[in-house]
Image 1: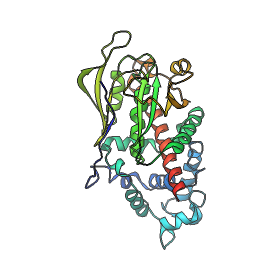
Image 2 (image 1 turned 60 degrees about the vertical axis):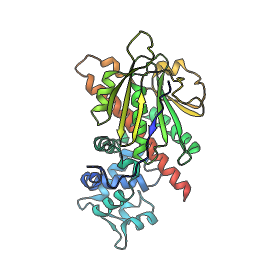
Image 3 (image 1 turned 180 degrees about the vertical axis):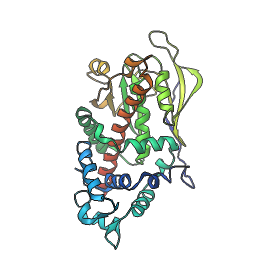
Image 4 (image 1 turned 45 degrees about the vertical axis):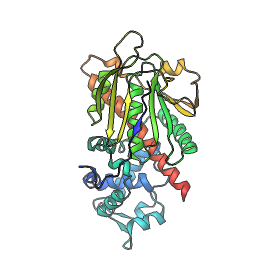
Amino acid sequence: MRLWLRFVPLVLPMFPAGVAAAAEGAGPFVQALWLIQRYGHSDVIVPENDRKLKGALSKALGKSGLLTEASANSFLPPSVFSKLAGPDGVLDPSEARNHLEVDMPESRKRLFPRVAEHADLLTTSFDLIDEPHREAAAKLVDWIVANYRSGQPLPITVICTGNSRRSMLGAILGNIAAAYYGMPEIRFHSGGTAPSAFNRRTIATLKEIGVEVEPTGREAARGEPQTANPIYSVRWGIGLEATEFSKTYLDPVNPQHDFAALLVCGEADAGCPVVKGASVRISMPYLDPKIYDDSPFEARKYAERRDDIGRLMLCVMMQVRNRLQQAER
């Protein structure tokens, strides 16, 4: 049985409810931050400089919420600022909002509103990405930029031991990030080394941000122990969906060659010194939220891990988008 990711192209006549208002509701600071993430100097928008950027941007905006060429010089190239600001040489919140709405990728408009809203939130916290994950993210950015061809699928497989928690989060949040930045053809898959089942707590934390996860009524092959392994339909937007179940990373539904392998747990990282068929192997382990199961902190710890992985995926895709578009100029 072959169950492939399905990305259905749709052209919508209008923004889904809530998406068009995202830039307007974000406020002047976040609007300016998003513009800089979109058009800013490449060394300014890397995660290690994110906190410094926010402090400088807050000072530059002051009480007025306006940016001038002089105050924005450290963030934006003068030629770019001139185009954004227009003849008066001042970039105000309404202009920032208009630029953001005009520049919004079609695939972002197709994200469910709650999913898009949560992605918006995570783009404001790239400073929380720690140094080891920054290094891993930089490797993934380099690989995607070197291998991306517009409109052609580019596969990435996220691997952990049981394919029940971190790898599921990585694949689904990776696909959300790819759609958010207008590259849904970058397709994230998940797999494990000792598959079990898509954990109910992982499902709950995804549903919390608006992802639809529904059982199909079918079951995939069981791993060890012989735990039920239901097959789920996962949707994060209109025409943006995948079929998910716990499986090995070599399962026939996953890419078999020329993919990036992301090792998101220490056990899988140690157990897979070589990932068959992968063109690059990137270690980015995260602490397993399983250790908090059945504790008072369970839901919050799953949300914490979801957001750790989500902001890294978004930061990767933001940098990929910018580098690809800079190369086209």
